[in-house]
Structures are given as C-alpha cells and as structure tokens.
Amino acid sequence: MSRAVADPPPLGDGVVDLLLWLREAGVVLWTEQGRLRFEAPAGVMTDEIRERVAQRRAEVIAFLAEADVAERTSVWIGMPDGVRLAADVFRPKRHGVTISEPLPVIWCHERYRRAEAVAGGIMTKLDAQPWLKELLRHEYVVVVVDVRGSGASEGVRPVEFAVEETQDAYAVTEWLAAQQWCTGRVGMFGMSYSGVAQLLAAGAAPPHLAAIVPQMALFDLFAFLRPGGVFRDNFARAWSELVHRLDTQPGAARADARTDVAATVAAHQHNVDVFAQAARLKCRDSRDEATGRTLYEELNPAGAIARISASGVPICHLSGWYDIWVRDTTLWFRNLTNPQRMIIGPWSHNSCGNDFLATEHLRWYDRWLKDIDNGVTDEPPVRYFTMSAPPGTQWRSSAQWPPAQVRPTEFFFRAGPAATISSVNDGLLTAVAPTDPDGVDVYRVDYTTTTGRTTRWADGYGGGFRYHLTPNDRKALTYTTPVLSRDVEVTGHPVVHLWVSADQPDADFFVYLEEVDERGESHYVSEAVIRASYRACGPAPYDTMGLPFLPGVTESVQPLPAEPVELVADLHPTSNVFVAGRRLRVSVTGCDRDNADTPRRVPPPVVRIHRSARYLSRVVLPIMPSP
Image (cartoon, rainbow, N blue to C red; front, side):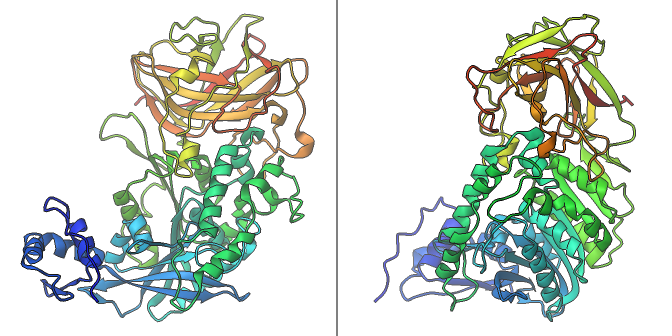
C-alpha cells in the first residue's frame, strides 16, 4: 500500500523545500557525470513534478554537490577501560567517489552531541558547522566523537574535564592514526568545551597528534566561575541544564543500528549535577563532598601548562573580544611554549564567521599536517582586530601580547558633574589626579541593576549577545571623560583600582568600561567584578602578564575593615578605538542581577568609593600611542 504524501510545495518555495518533499515522497536523487538521475515510487514523478525539477535543475545539482562532499560512517571506538565512544567519520569524496588513499584526520571531542536524530534524518556536525565542508574539500577526514557519558557514548560523568576524558582523547587520536584511511597525522578542532579538550589532549602527548586549533577555550576554572569571588550562577545554571538535557533526553544519533541508544542515554542519568557541584565550591581550595577532591585545583585546565608545553604540539588559538574566555586565550598564549598563533576578532562566543574559520583552520592544518609551506609560521604570531578603527586598518599584527607599544595610562575618578547622565553621582574621569583630601561617592547597593540577559555570559550558552547599558548607568556610580578631542585606542588589559569602605562586612563591585556616543547612549566594551572579602592578591601559579591574581583560597577571604581598602581587578582585554567626539566612561554597581550571584542583604549595603589625593580610585588603560 502506498503512503500518503503531502501536496508538493508552492512554486515560489526554495530548492530545499522541493528536495525535502521529494525525500518524503521516497524519491532518491543523485548526479552522474553532470546529469541528474532519480529513482521514484510509481506515480510520484508526475509531469508537474518533473517540470519543477527541470526548472531548478542547476540548483538541485549544485545542492547535491554541496551535500555530497563526504561519506559518513558511524562507528564505536573502544577505550582501554571498556567504555565505547560513538563517532562519526566523514571521508571526503573526489568526483563523487570516496577517496581511498590515506589522508590527514582532524577530529573533535564533542560535549554537545556529535549528531542529532531529527524528523526526516540526522543532523550532523557538518550541518551545525558548515565550514567543515571546506576542510573536506581540501581532503581532510573529519571525525566527531561524543565524550564519554554524553551523546550516544557509554559511561558516566562524575565531573567535567575528568582525567578519564583526557585518556580517551589519547586513545581516540592513536586509534585514528592507525586507520588505513589516515596518513598517521592527526589534528583536532572544536570550540568552548571542545577547545579545552584539545589542550588537555595535547597535554597527554599522543604521538600522532600533530596540531590543534582550540577556539574560545577556558584557562582557569575558578577565575571563570567565581571571578573576584563572585559566583557566575546564571551561566553555571543554564549550562548545567543544557548538558543535562543533552545527556539524558532522546535525540542523540546512534552509533550503529544494533545498539539501543535509549539504554545508553539512560545511564547518563547518573552524571553529576554540574550546577549543584559548582555552587558548593566557594573557594579555590574548597573540597567537593561527593568526590573528596579539590576540583578547582585538580581539574583546572591551567594545571596542564607544563604537560602541554612539553608535548610541543603546534597550537592556533582563536577567540573574540566579547567571548567569555578571551582573557583565558591570552593566558594560554602567554604561558605555553609550543609553536603558537593567536587570533582575536570582534566576536562573541557564538558569532565567529564560517569563512574565517575555514581559512584559519586550513592554514594551520596545511602547515602541520601536510607540510605545506604557506607562510603562516613566518607571520607575527598575534593577529587581532581593533574595533572602530578606520576601515582597512582593523586587523593588526604583533610579535607579542600585549603589544609592546601600549602605555599604561591612569584615568582618575573625580567629582562631577560630567553633565552626561542622571546617574547616582555623574562623576568625572580625567587624566589629572584629584587633590581633594576627602573626596568620596556614597552608594546604596541597588539590587535591580543588571547588564541584561543577552550578555557575553549568556552568549556562552547560546542566549544571544546584545547590550543596552544606559538604563543600568542611571542606577550606578559613573565616571565619564569630557568629549574626546582625538581617537583613543585601548589595546590590552585595563585594570581598575577601587578604594572602598562599607557599612557591612562585605560587598560586590561590578565595573564596566563603556563608550558614550554623541546621543549619550552607553556602549559596552569590557568589565570586571570583585567581592571585597576576596580582595587579597597573591603569587600566581602561572604568568599573569603582571595582572592581579586573587588566590580565592579559604584563608585569604577576609571581611572589610572600618578603614578604606584597595580592590584591584583586571577587566577583560579589548582592542577598541574610542572615537573622537565621544566619551569614555567607567560605571560601578553593586549587583548584576541576571548574571551573577550577589547575596541580598537587608538593608542593602551602603558603600563608599573614595577618590581623594590619598585614595586614588582609578582605571589604568593600555593606550596605544597615535601613529
């Protein structure tokens, strides 16, 4: 009995709609020596449908050619402890035929499902990241592997970044290198969690790992989840809910037709509750009750610096100025001794373009996996985008990070009015230090202040990226420059120094660097946060580029004394031209309601920011001298 098929799509619909209808109707289309061929159930290919296909013949052939770049095979890869990982292998085609000779392999250790079972078929990594097709066209085998305890892979996850996962990466790399379709040279790709996974894999030193391209990768786990001691609870909760859903709900594509993927996914119910675990660990040396381990210390990616450097694996770091881990990217680059390249563009976590990704990955892989002398290692190792720079000059190069030319320049908090906004104080920001012996701004913490729900942090879990800071500034302490008479380029890591006191033993301070346009609207550039009780600075276990390091260990946490104390924090790095005719602003609040966990005290704390000749509250900006 033939199945019922919906009416064909209207003539105006695109080629994808037509092809989806044909697939639903049981029609198989392919190309053969430039000619379009098909097989169809009786009665489906009516004269009308034939005419529609003929009208879109060129589009259909082009679409099929685009889609038919690789042969996909799903396989199991066994680990030394018996756990099996689900993998998709994409072997490129040449003239429609799968390439038989050995090729270099690049692979991703995927935390967010390697493939999804959706209505009508399977959505693979090639659908989610189309730039990978360009790598296939350049004859690289692409492999995507579900991490253990996730997707269709077996196992459970008691923690994230487990040692077993790094051992898996070693085993997968060597398994790939041993396949007859591999030359023995293996690279890795992936962003976010998969970016960290690459670095940890390099630290395990698989003999056949020849290059990695970590995109937007975490460096210091504690400094990210509790920057300045403040728990980034919104990110932790949203990410925890995301991975729990992906790990335990239906939708993961199976690795073979015989395995019950539902049973595998059911075992993932035993994975750790990431949010609950993170919420309990308040200090860098806090011990997790469930595992008995100091997770921030034992599982910190930065703890692998020495092993990664010893591996010698060439690394191309990719990030964006609005990414959640752009600071981390610069720290990786600074601390590793491997052959390295670092590229930072004008992107947030999820906004990097496909063309750029294909180009930069190919340049790195061609050099290290195919021995193509393409000049990538002859260029300065740092390439970065300067926002608001004149067209044609935005992309810059440097032999080091930060660039040697930048000059730290102090801008001091002063009494206003700046006559720019009806904020709590409307203070001034100037290059001239105050002489007032008693300057102070008094601020009662407002628990409604927020940078919104589409911040760099929200974009880190797919929540979108857009700021509108002016309403927040009206509830803040603000310090704004006069109108700039010339362009001011800030490239590097701003540092804020706050001299504070409060009527309670603790308080949080959120600091924002902003550009104020000609209409008085505030535009986000960067930020920092610090909890006063976590203010102690100390020696770091890695090179901080001279930036303050807050140990955040239990014994270093101290309440505020009665007298003013200095808080020092670095803002996320940036490269931005503050355009002549606009203003530069620093705003300070005591809460970021939608992005961080500030305890609500009753009554709210009254804090004082001291800005006198004795207590020089200020921001130090890395200024690039004018050419």
